[in-house]
Length: 558
Image 1 (cartoon, rainbow, N blue to C red):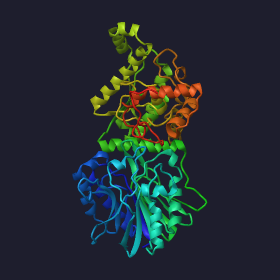
Image 2 (cartoon, rainbow, N blue to C red):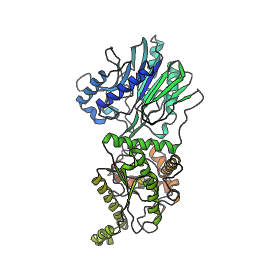
Image 3 (cartoon, rainbow, N blue to C red):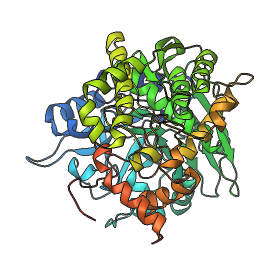
Image 4 (cartoon, rainbow, N blue to C red):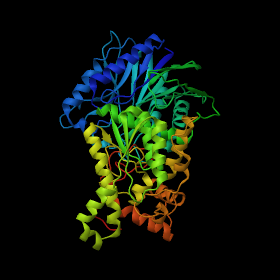
């Protein structure tokens, strides 16, 4: 056997029947293309991550039964939950081999269960004590690992596991168990810091094992986690073949001829190419802005598709965040399904409304202009005594909350989802209003620092030439919430070019200095934890995002 297909697919969590049909269709297409064997991703039958659905024994049993019943014209390795072997034990994260006319068989169970950052697999699974191996595939043996099992080998995990499955496979080979290749069924979440790491992983594993190492990764968005695909194969001498990002397809690889690798797209209208690079080269990555744009767009698109959401409503202020969110929404579900609301107050500048109109027109989406002065005056009068004697920011926040009410009202009326337009810098500093601009079911920019939002804006314009949905005025004017006369973000925050590195160093790297500015920034960061606990899902693009990977107490002192 020399030709193996990696099925880079986008499963929906819990949709067992739909996921099975998707796998079967891809395997059949791979067979027609000449594949002698196919590999799908980790937990493709259940979708990853299934979270507490795994605590339902009926769900686990249904996944396992469905995996065993998958019909494939060629040998196929499938990731699925496997039922516990003894009472009160947890299930396994496993791999099943199926093939036409052959008895289905469990051929591997995950050894290394990550319990850090966004991972909590120790909560759900029982660990196995050895990697898998299938000795019945066309007369050759294939080593089998599952996601984290391979990462230990390059030291890219913060856990001190008792074993290295790659070294275990290598030991078996030395003891007389020859293998043609080893595979890794993976659902490896995306973040920017992973650039180039998978290439290093497959190269080192292939070098250690002395045969090709194939990693099949999930693609798509599930809740806050994004999966970039980029399924990849490494050879012992260092050659690497990498599939495209952010799309479904089949990576067809000849183990004896890396240069013969092919990509078969499963996404309608997608024209993508794989990369084949030599030992001294690395796969080429897109610009940071382009990769982030692709990531959050697919995240929003999948969140809507998998949740049955067909329409989006958002507030459009004429600022960079809402303009970028509008462009992402239009790309994700189509401009005809997106409504923008421009809601000027007496503090709004004329150019803000003009910028919002220009963006909406360039994107082909609907925009309604709903002035809030009368509503604001009415609420201000009703709460006059409280507002006159209270904190000055309360008056400013009323405007944000009025806008939030209008956005939610329009979304409710249209059966749509509102999206929140805030970014990670604002969320870190609490420079946002609960029940105002934080309203929404999804926050596309919630894990992007403000400086990164500008990079995404440039990418949007690069992709939209000759027209620019993000106007020059929007790109260059000082950021402002426009809740007070002549207000600028820098009246309340350090410049974003100063603020963002401080935040990134602390949140993602745990690095800080004792300067007064850093101390002030981090004090404000932790004082606003209560706001982030109420944030809607945001697609994770950094190696530490607010949410599952950021578990800070609320009632605490520092």
